[in-house]
Image (tube, rainbow, N blue to C red; front, side):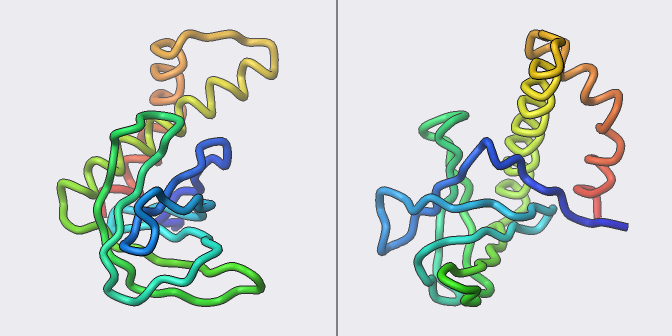
Length: 138
């Protein structure tokens, strides 16, 4: 069974490190209970502390973690980041759920169904909530 979730591409993330206090834009690839994988232009060191943000959701929101792997793939780096602790993991789960619901709402809108955020959240939870919870429970 799949133990990670594909993050919607319409919500880019920023990775803040000692080298990049303003944040480097990253493409988030996968997210799980313990961490995430993203694609960056810049190389990061193993064990380097980082913070993650999703500016399209909230400017001051940050999740802390550390780099566990950084591999060059073509002209970018695939970076694996472990969340610092359980509270950071929980925050990431909540933010990821908001991203998934908003992506779902936007997709329905493109199909001609306009829903407010609360109605979209209820429908998303009914359809995908159990699967989402299962991925983040292990």
